[in-house]
Image (tube, rainbow over the protein chains, first blue to last red):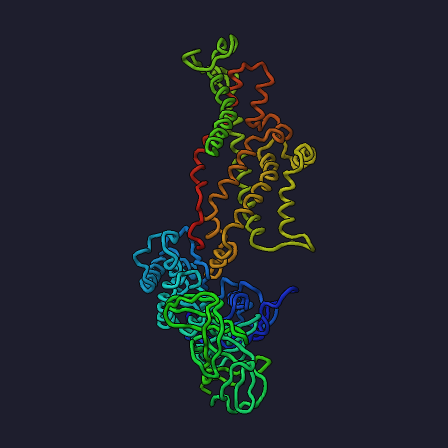
Amino acid sequence: MKGSTVNLNLHNVSVEDEREVILKDITFDFKPGKIYVLIGRTGSGKTSLMRTIAGLIEPTDGEIYLGEERLDEVPIWQRGIAMVYQQFINYPQRTVLNNVEFPLLRSGISKADAKVQALAMLEKVGLTEFKDRKPSQLSGGQQQRVAIARALVRNTRVILLDEPLMNLDYKLREQLREEFRILFKTTSNSVTIYATTEPSESLFLGDELLVMRQGRIIQHGKPNYVFENPSTIDVAQIVNDPPMSILDGEIKGGRVNIDGSINFEVPNHLKSQPDGKYKIGMRASEVILGGNMSNSEEGSVSLAEVSGSETLLYVKLRIGEVVLQLEGIHDYHIGQRVVISIAPERIFLFNMDSTLCAAPGN
Amino acid sequence: MSRIFKYSFIFIWSAFVLTPLSWALVTSFKPPAAVNNGATFIPWLQFQPTLDGWKDITGISGYANLFPPLINSATVTFFATLVSLTFGCMAAYGLSRFSYGWKHYKNPDIIFFFISQRIMPPAVLAVPFFILLKTLHLLDTKLGLVLVLTSGLMPIVVWLLVDFFNQLPKEIDEMAMLEGCNPFEAFVRTILPLSKPGLTVAGMFSIIFGWNDLFFALVLTFTNVQTLPVAVVALNGTVTPFWTLCASAIFSILPLIGLAFVVERFLSKGGFAGAVR
């Protein structure tokens, strides 16, 4: 069965205790050869779902199948699942080579074969020259690569990656993200599940996106589709970084009116929407700085944050707060007056119960 | 200022600990005149050292021979420590990693139960142990003493190692299990090799307590299994000269001092550096 291509099926998997619901009715069919990205805020249940699949948490309800095999009845050590943690977990007393050999030896492979396979995997992750070092003698990125090598070397049926880049610096994260994509696409026929809180990572790595909130999968689909069509405001907030700005507004007489302050003609993609009250969503990258039309409003900067080569500007308007993502590094001070404009053709429309009515491009 | 205070404290404490020891060591080499005619401190200068005291306790002069009690003490302490460490580390690992309990009694209560056995004064246990060993025909045997000492050493081992295992990341054993080890193998293959500092500390405590046990050895053994503390006390009860008594005192602690030097290097910090970043 090892390395074979079988689906991972979850049927109504729940994990609850008397105090809280950790996972609720998770049903999903994971297919081999694809990278599934779990995205959600901290505490949304991503890690718990992975630990439940791995056997480290026992489901209180539901079934897990790997092909025909009832996985949740198999002991952890016989499940054949690899997992990479947020923290860089390695065996500190073993060398890098011994770390990568360990799972192979445990699966019954001869020492000579294990060494050959471990060395080949170390070459793939670029650690050949460090094979005789202890993990503590490596940098954070290299330690995590050892953990990845250990996870990949066994060619397991399921690989779980729990925010593996979280504890790395920005540059290294970007570099490893590129490497992951190549590694997982070229070496693995497994079901690969990758948890992250970062939308950019999910869009870059994922073949399929599963958005989680409060222990439930609230939307799934191709990353681009979910990004363009978030089913609810919650999804929109989770898959956008910085989160989407949401303002109260209404459609009346062919015009969109945001709290009586911003006013513009209903754009094409909202033409079929009946008059009424709505919530209006705007991505930070699509709010425009400047303007003097009816779709503009003046406000004051409440926070200016430089992130990499971008500046995030939080602007407090009379009608609420919006976030702008500006290219380049800009110097704004708190309280500075700025004018922002909304791009009508790029707004998302949500019902007052937060479900999506219309998205740009539809 | 704090530096001066620190070094003054270390100096005073060292003097407090080392002065009686040095005094005993020097006295063990003194001839009778160097003891009886006023205090002397410096060998060769104030007195000519002799080995009379040491000859008295090593069977050379025919006075007493502490080697058989030394071997008894070493055997009993070794096996009591071995049993305590073997089972104690497994108990401690279980209490660190798994949840046990009945109603509102949970792991911390079980750990307290272990250590509570040390709170009880040994005198309370003397009679029950005596009756137990008598019933099992283990009075005045090494096995009997090993069993009794183990019951006292195991709580120390469990108490120390639970805390040590709690500091080792659980993810290491989880990883080992995901990589094909059952819980026992995960413990033996990944946690135990990381636990040398903890095992060394627990082992040292066991050895010190086991080696210095006088009470149970006095109550539960007679002539066949005389341990070193009992033999030293027995010397005291006779008309043994000071220099011989001092030699016996030094003789009884020498193995522990030697052991302390050997194991010190295992106590280096950072035993599990690199496990988790």
